[in-house]
Length: 193
Image (tube, rainbow, N blue to C red; front, top):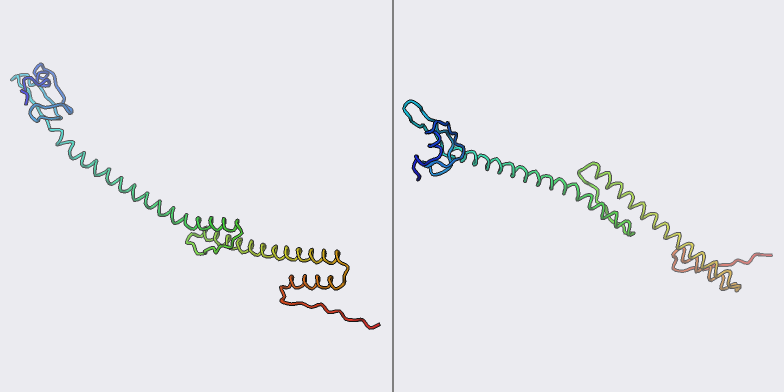
C-alpha cells in the first residue's frame, strides 16, 4: 500500500483543510472508503475516521438485490395470473368465434353452453339460438327452392305437351318429388252424364 504521507487527502488535511471521503481510495484499506480526514491544530495531528465502502455498500447491495428479486417475482406472478385470466376469458370467445365462422360457412356447429362468466354464457346462448334459427331458415329455404323447382318443371311439362297421358305423368312425378313418395298414381273418375 502507499504511504499516508503521499495520500492526497492526508496532505490536504495537514495543510489545515477538512477533507470528506466519499468512495475515495484509502491507502490502509486498499479500496474505496467513506469518512473524513480532519486536522487537529494544537498537536499538529491529522485524525482519520473512515469506514470501508464494502462495509456500507455490501448490506445495501444485498438488500437491493433481494428487493429486486422480490419485485421480479411479484411481476412474474402477476403476468402469469393475467395470462391465466386472459386464457380463461378467451377460450370461450375463441370457441364462439369459430362457431360464428362455421355458421357463416353454412355448417351447423354444436355450441357448448356452460361458461363460468355470465356475459360469455349469454353470448353462448345467443349464438346457439342464432345457429338454430339460421339452420331452420336454411332448411325452409331449401324446401321452398325444391318446391319451386318442382312446380316450374311440372308447369313447363304441362304447357309444353298437349298429350293428356304425358301431362298426367308429369303431375304425378311432381307430386312424388314434393312429397318424397316412393310411388304415385293419378286416378281419373268418369263423371256420370
